[in-house]
Amino acid sequence: MTAEHSRTAAEKDWAGVLRLDIASEAGTNRATRQYHEGALRVLRPHYLDRTGHVTYTVINPGGAYFGADNYLLDLTVRAGASATLTTQSATKVYKTPQGPAFQQMNVVVEEGGYCEYVPDQLIVYENGDYIQRTDVTLHTGASLVMSEIVTPGWSPRGEHFTYAGLSMRAEVRVTDGENTRRLALDHLRVRPAEEADVNAAGLMEGHTHTGQLLLASPVITDEFVDAAQQVLDDCGYTVGLSVLGGERSLGMRGLAVRSLAQSTAEIAAVHTHIITMFRDRAAGLGPLELRKY
Image (cartoon, rainbow, N blue to C red; front, side):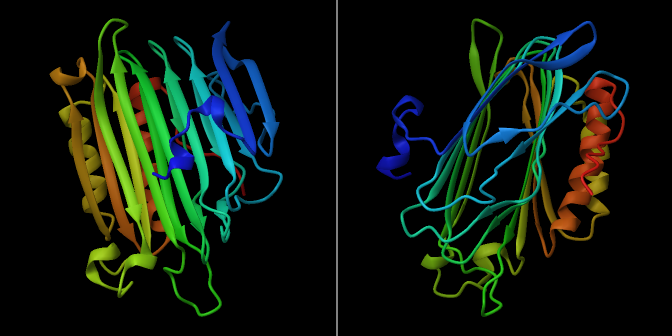
């Protein structure tokens, strides 16, 4: 991390800020507090089923992230509330000669809360550099879904890895109100500009797209892990699954899936399948259908 991006949120010059505080009232979930500033907005709440579960869509009127842009997203899901946060379209990072584009996301999910973060893919274009930091605090009875898919952007020469760099770090901590334990720390760092041969096996083992899916909930059982593994066994591309947590994480269990593939659609299909199984178990919700197209 550069010195520029080690500063605290209060010290930053944000190009865009979005804050949502979501609560459940009479069986319906909505943002009881909402704030936006600069180049981030949120569409009106959508209710895609009859459960009261709410979906918010983040938009960037500027259309993309540019050099030295800093963005802040703060999301709180209150006790017993249920929400999905997604994006209107892919997040695009264009060339960044002024320095990396940066996004900080802070998430708090209280006891009994259910939170999904399922954005469209991140596309980093030629000479683009992007840093993302995500910090999650999850109460012991809460549930979390976080999905990310990274796609290389188009370049005039038809090459896939022409971006300068990508760093995506996510840390999830679990708390019971008195004690706090780390459940997961995931850091994807890709620096094609530092590779002598971007097609070398060590970069992405010959693949062009990567995905990360993180689930956390006390309802994750060995049976669910086996069902998720079966989905991965049938997917037909390179993928790995890790089970997280247990007694060292205050009883919280997690599931991490890392994928390497040749298209966004391949990874998105597997993520959607596993998320659909999870949301039924954790929140009694139907299939994940964001209805964007």
